[in-house]
Amino acid sequence: MDLMIRGYREPDFQSVSALERENSPADCKPEVFIRQAGVLFPDTFLVAEYGGRVVGYTIGALVQHQPATGWIVRLAVAERHRRRGFGKNLVAAVTESLREQGAGEVYLSVSPSNHAARVLYEKRGFREVDFCPAYFGEGADRYILRSDLACPEGLISRD
Image (tube, rainbow, N blue to C red; front, side):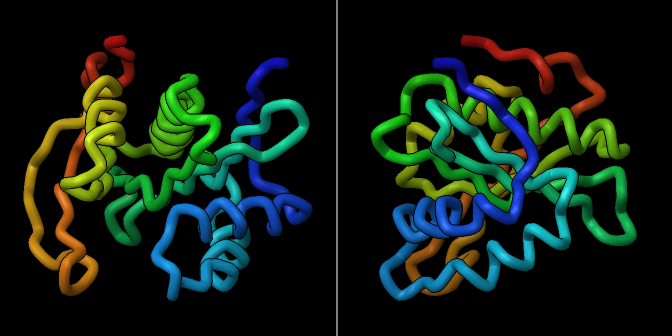
């Protein structure tokens, strides 16, 4: 079975919503976000499909009025499919999509406790540029990471 990265489609809604619930706090209802992201980010809402099932997804976006700046808004891979390169492939695909749309730099936020994600992002050329306490509210600190897409190191995997 091969991994396929492709654009999000309406039939993916339930699978992606389930992944988001698996990777979010218990009081989070992701359906509104997922539904609207499918409309707002059609070129940068990507899913990872493996064995005919959605096993991960990512959403990228360009900053309004700053189209040379992109963000990886979300990245999630089902727990049982982690450490198999699916996240790496999703990051590569979404950064490439943002670059094709004119982004020269891409940012993302990551929890200080999510060491596996930090390693993944650093291998894809992301570097810490800021630390924001309570970025998403009390107890939700985040590191802000940046990748320069104009620099080859931001596009090359170092694994």
